[in-house]
Image: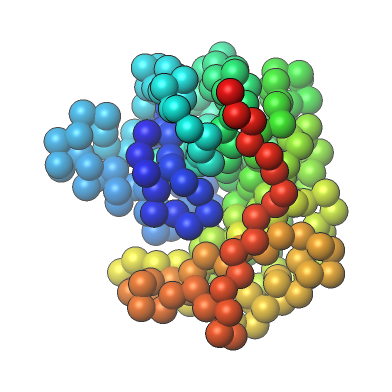
Length: 242
């Protein structure tokens, strides 16, 4: 586990690390860059760098957290990667269910795999498992319909890096939308009108809107003010205390 600088969560938990690029949003993957850095630092968990690796020992970690946490699951991978066995995914779901005092945020670009497993009855959802999909441009919007069909109680979209407009979003049964620009050495630009349009769509449908960052080569400098205001809304939820 690790405390996280990601604004919409508190910490990260990575029972799987490593991934493969499957869409435009993956082009400048921050996790790939971070994995290379961690390997160079000698961190044992990343000795395989960004090659998909399952960490069975991480399954015990959430049981050790003493206070309720909001946790981003697999910030360094995708739980629904085709090479992650369904049996291991089920173990991760069991851990999340057995720790109801924490909120677990799962994010995927492989919504088709997630929904297939769900329709087969292989995923045991609990109230504290939030399921999200990445929607970086119009082409990725098809993931929203797949997410909507899932049995996850709380559903969210991560429009980051936002590399194109997202007009006419179908936000039915969507609880939360995160928007952010790309950062790094060669970030693709994000237009203000794209962000404002998504914000307005969220307001019309009463969906929580979270503006994470403008991004760019210096994301700290560009910040996260939208017309002079911060938008850091979260969906309603209750964490259970043990």
